[in-house]
Image (cartoon, rainbow, N blue to C red; front, side, top):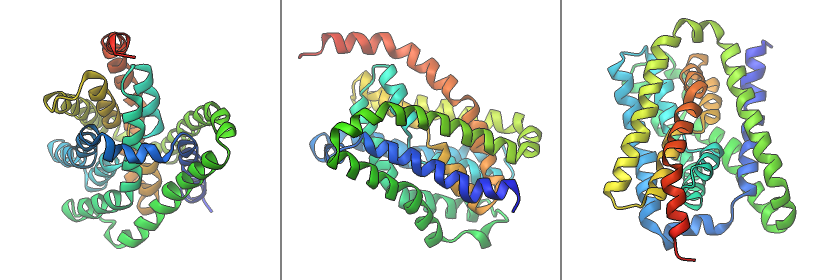
Length: 292
């Protein structure tokens, strides 16, 4: 078995499962109940994440005239849920971390439907030469196995062993970052020639998607009268996708699909980190003046 096959079939699913289990350690049922208690922020955030982001990815792929496989890979990335790194950067930016975590949790569950649907539609729209390998049911089962099951295990462990789970959270957060970086490096190395040959084209497309998604989602959130801290959380979710999921699902279909997510991952922390720095002071002031 080639190294790239081992990476795609073994390394990626294991890494993503561990990351999702770590996310589960930070979640409680209240993170899902928040949709009923505070629906406006959640619904606006999810609408941006589940509708605006995939549509933007379709538009950017058309705008730059990406090859079919790369276009599908970009849409797959755009349809992927937020990740634990979005929660972390929202915290650093003094955004609404509870909203960020809730969006990540709910969008991760919704990914069972949204990711396979976006993948299928993109393959058909761009007439990508991977159609025979795309099975809606197969993709649903892959997403379920490597995201929802470990997420549920992490939540179950937290419910049964709350103190141990809280103590383990920082270690799992560090492990998640290390695993994420390992996945990106592995994706780049496994498709090194394609990444280097198409880096300029994909860098422009992925940067456009990243900046447009964060800008539009922040603006829409403010127009919908969410406060700055809530709008920050929404923008971070749109800027820091679960690229590990996009790479894992893409690799199971066609190796070319992972290249956009690998390129996107190379700089998304730079743009999101810059945004966090810009809004930090205003958000910190809002926290300081908020009623106890």
